Length: 120
Image (cartoon, helix red, strand yellow):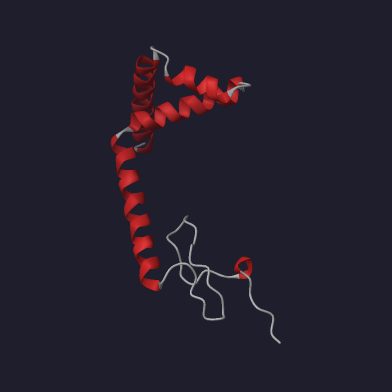
């Protein structure tokens, strides 16, 4: 009697988009898994479309990169005991818009400098 495959031993039946997990774990007993081929393809298409839309949005809003980068830098530097309280204080700080504006300007200056250095 052959040993049956468990879900944990199953390999994905189709390749998900780069960097995204597979959800079609079928087995060799004819079980196609949770998704049919058509459903898996629609899911993959949705993931790709969503990722592209997210990247486009982030490129249109560089202040998000400045905000997240600064927040994470503060967390790593200060290592707060209560991260939720620290995050609440950080994101409700009345001076945050000015700080993000300064970070955005510094980012623009770095990008300009990088462009100039690249032309040399």
